Length: 510
Image 1: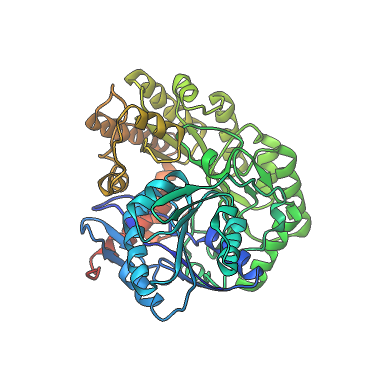
Image 2: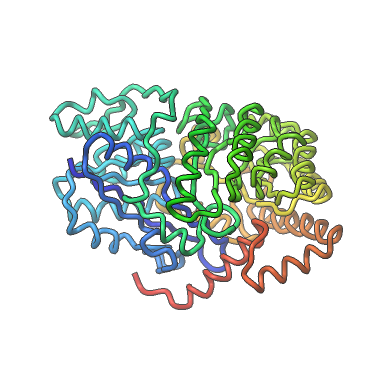
């Protein structure tokens, strides 16, 4: 079978909105490797990787598309023969442009079977099929085995009902098959195929998920998360099974990337990389023994239970220079409400240890949860102050966003707050955190203007405290930004924003 895999267009907020990370499509690269391993022909189109520095007005012109537009994607696909087309849609805010891409692909490939995967379609498969009649099926959760079986079933003319873990269109009916059990041996998966989705444009332009530390390769050491945070789609996407690869297999992949692509840094895309203390120490110890000369970072947010002074010491010795924590809130009541099982004092101790070891530390905070009160947010403000005092370098302070496929979204929908998940809502997810003076509150106690004010105050409080305690860091930050050199996540965001504003002056029409 001939399979075309497509990364849909990436949409950015208007104005001076936050710059988004430009990440290689490691999920699709894993899918490509699995399908090729099964004996099929695979071709890929990466909307960002093929034009990472190109910005164009979206169909709604106040938004911006980074990379190829849907029309440009389908122009490139026109000459490609494909029996099956797979489209990756990771986030709900990408759905309107992804839907547009799928419709154009249906026009250029009228007889192809079109399936989609990723966080969005896993969270809202029936809705995706109803909203886009050109889409034939949604692959739920971890996709390698499911995608391979779908292609095999289509090749043999079998019914899709034998494939677990999909929702598909059967005439006028939408059918959901039983869930698929996750593979326990994740080392059995073929490594990401960076021939189908070339990695060089990202490496050459030093683009990635974390702080820019040169040529950065994405990598996964673990999959899933054992926790059940109500605002997160992980329980629906991955279940609560956390699986770790053999440390030697991860290190083999890293060494191969260094030899092949001259990589100097690795961005770990794991949801929750550090769960088992013994695993991370073994990984670091073996990395030191192998004398692998590179840096690595954990930019997506981790927990603190297994990260103590000994662990951070091993991490630093092994080359880890940047780590993100995800406390989410400074209010114990809110943490209990969202099932975020963390102990704030324990997390502060872990942050302090990481800073003392020499790492750059960033923390993720969310405000505006349903039922959150002013008192709860004031507790979070105090926690921001405490984080600045222990030396945390940066924070990411956003308003809560309700994504389908999460327990909290379902609660809000059951209350009648989301009657339809239309394009307006998808675009609102892009715009709601477009700047520090915006936000959409989902709490009945806090309106949108107050939420925006809290975001501004929280950021001001944190950075004012941080630079008051360490004034030389402010001068260093200014010098790094002027020189375009990154040492922290905050500097990374500002430098990317400057680059984007320069690029926006010369955007081309869609």
